[in-house]
Image (cartoon, rainbow, N blue to C red):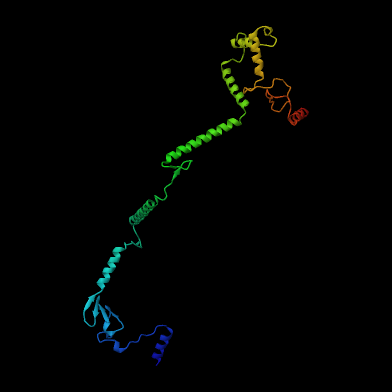
Length: 283
């Protein structure tokens, strides 16, 4: 009674119920004694008792015809076909390994990675090709043309920068610097002292025409030379004409003379005059 109640308890609460079979459904050949071994025997059951088969030593046994059919060989062939279709993946062995084995594994991995990378590059070579264009949007086949255009642009930008620098410079200052450099070159060949027999100094004195020279009264050549010398005083370093009336124009900080077309009217606000007065009072 106790054994029966234990079985009922286990069947109720363990979730595993003991399978019951009718004696009529089991044939004589499927009855197994207690002492028989069931290592290579597997029983399968269907709805009808006539369709019950016995699997023994890798064969199907038909109960009605008592004939056997190999089934393990078919399964083995299917497994072989699957192995042929799927490439074998080498698993890394555990435990101690030699240095040569590890190096070979690393080389194989690197080769595989390079092959995969090359395939990807081939696939994306057409899609990722760069298209070069010029300033007008036209396609350029060779990048050398692009480099030439880039160099031309750089040259043009450099020339433009130089021109802007020249425009922003003071023309009078540039001319003065040029004259100063030329004068230094001339002074290299000249001595420090000037003597009575210096030919260059004597010629410059002869060519110089003074306002007290009596030849200005009758000699036309001397008159023309004197006029040219006086006109040079009213010409700027850059070659522009200046106002001839000496000191009849207002002073300014930079000592800039008005142009020769000036009508003599001061159109300033008087700042330059006040600035000069402040400088005088400061001293």
